[in-house]
Image 1 (cartoon, rainbow over the protein chains, first blue to last red):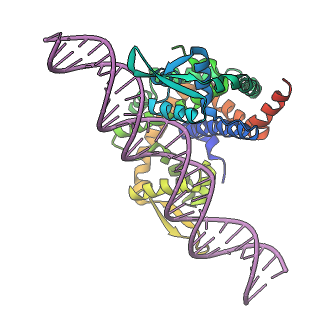
Image 2 (cartoon, each protein chain N blue to C red):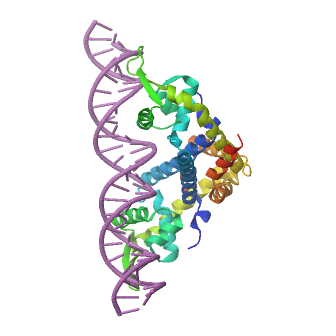
Length: 160
Length: 160
DNA sequence: AAAAAATATGTAACCGGTTATATTATTTTG
DNA sequence: CAAAATAATATAACCGGTTACATATTTTTT
């Protein structure tokens, strides 16, 4: 069976994007496992945000890393269970849950940063041949958001 | 809240890959909806494969488009329910289910192809600024598979 | 040719995310 | 200031995929 993915535009692209993502996540997870670090790849961003901002609400995090707020709740609940995050009600607005890194998390940060650094360097390594990839992906995303794929399809469809 | 995703390497990349993919899938789905085509974006590849090969088994499809075989079964079951795919046992090997496009599917193909063509052109449009994106993504995937991310991380970790 | 191993499919349980819905607190408006 | 609208969080139900497990058939080994 020949390799369909290469030759097939749209369908192929989305498959490729997904698999690439999975590969990164999977390998990072394995790396954590082998080093006995009880954190998950998708906590990385939340760690970094909370390090920078001391305490943040669920929605602030959701918006910043662009996932739904139920997803943030699930993630941070797990982080709480592992003792890395705690929360308190914001006294000025009782609706808000302020999320915060625990002491345990702060203490572990330097170690984690060593790992993340290694990850960063490895990624740069992998990207050295495709320098502008990140930029291009960002641009593609913006193009897509502005005058979307759908609208373009309509135009082309009319001209056939 | 500033834009974390841009500045953050690995974590940012995987987020970006996922969202880009979602955007494509979502917009394609919407497009189908508005044109009253009762097919789903992820059927595209299977349609194309079955058009080319007349009849294929579950595992052949799974390998070619690189998803798990239970996923193929779910997809094709839905396609069957919509009357686009049928199957028969391979008489030479009774384990195998041969999947095949129905007459209804064959009749609808020309129409679908017009849509897919428009999609293809739109994608090229979007990629015209980032010419080598597809190639680069493929290369990144290969690099990643060969000497994986994890192994690279180990190396960098030792040098700190 | 019988036993063991491998292959193809199907099903169940799970996973990380989503949207839809509910509840509570705050802000805006008449 | 009461009523309505909005915002923040929490939870439920779902979705598209996965891995783990079960079953039937074929192939290999002895």
